[in-house]
Image (cartoon, rainbow, N blue to C red; front, side, top):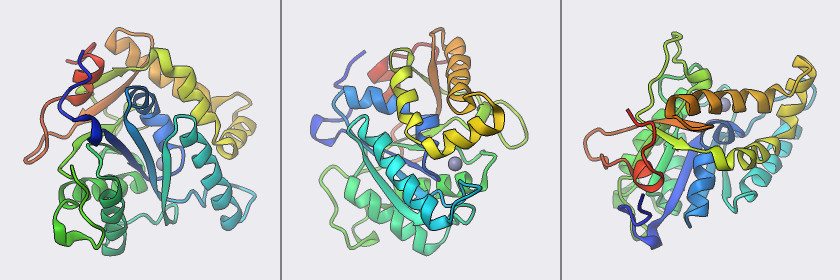
Length: 259
Ligand SMILES: [Zn+2]
């Protein structure tokens, strides 16, 4: 287990680019916490603003509330939250959204990126995944944006997070290439997720239990069982042409459970 890995100290920046506020907290916050503790600068971004996450509020009201909740969740680990301000249910792979994503990547210059899997049940997640994949490859090209190219910009280590329940859209299980042990940070992950009070409240009212946090814990325990630890997050690493193929997360945190 080495923290020297393949990224030098001044370039240790991680970005989770997801579709909605709370997606990163469900899917990869445990790993983000571990990266933050290892000295990495953490960025959490969402393509959409969460404006459909309500049954009672206006889209403006809920979007403003969810921006604050996402900022509070990020602040738990000293991370920065970015919102690309698209609308829930209308995330598409188009030129304006690609440009927003390129500009975000230009400012952050992440060396490890977390995205939804493209085999996700929710189309906003699929679109956000494709946007992030395209931009992770493109953003370092000087002509791709008017933002300057930061030192250290290069095609990052790219990991796809688990879909909800670890199932693809047809109900088949996704097999992680990489597990990260989050046993020691599970409660901090729950604290980040709990910052999304607007979502937790209506799910609690609907189910009569704290399903919001319980479902996260159940999934972490399921992945943990596969990895031989109490709680884990699962990822599939993108290892196509031009992408780093060494498993950075395994190098940083150990490869327990990696098939
Ligand atoms: Zn989502």
